[in-house]
View 1 (cartoon, rainbow, N blue to C red):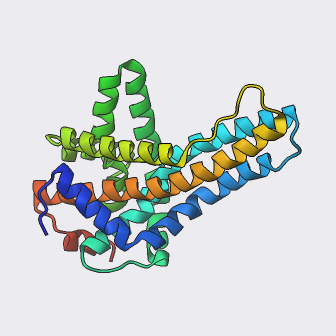
View 2: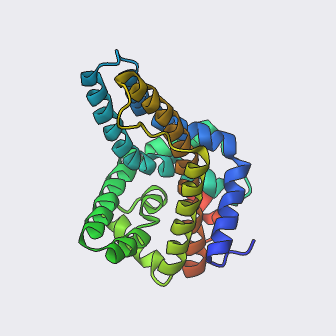
Length: 250
């Protein structure tokens, strides 16, 4: 396998790994998103009154925000599956969950820190935001595989991504464009200003189904891409093979 770090190579390998494990990876991702989105669904099943509509809108927003941090859990769990696949072995759903959950707290801490750092950089100016996003692209995967601690994971990600931020930016942008195209094809449902409360509830229910499906698909895909990028960066910078990374989980 060509392990040279590049946009085409990482994405090609990432899509290959993702498709080969599509069902288990989607199921794992759906498990993590299930509880918050069930909460949103229950809010949308309430009586269609203006008050309940406002409550449902708030719940929908909170759940959407929580989903950003849930990506850290998804990455923690799928990292194991990606490494094993690149090692030539297929990891079961149970093995992925057991390995990922054993690294649950470090992944959560790193995910929160990386998210806050990226959000803070974007609030300053757009360009620093993208730089920090690319710099911390593999931070969660580092926390899962190397377990150096939260702050050390951020520093380690910065070291691994040094010299490859443009390639990582290309990967991030291409996945974003793909997700945008899917959104346009599916057609986001928008409530007209004069719609009744009942119609607004129906629209939000449709939007919920579309959002959940999209987040499960692209949440798993983004986690796989970050994990593949990590493996490629380790090989290029340190000569570490997928077999050596897989041995860490033994």
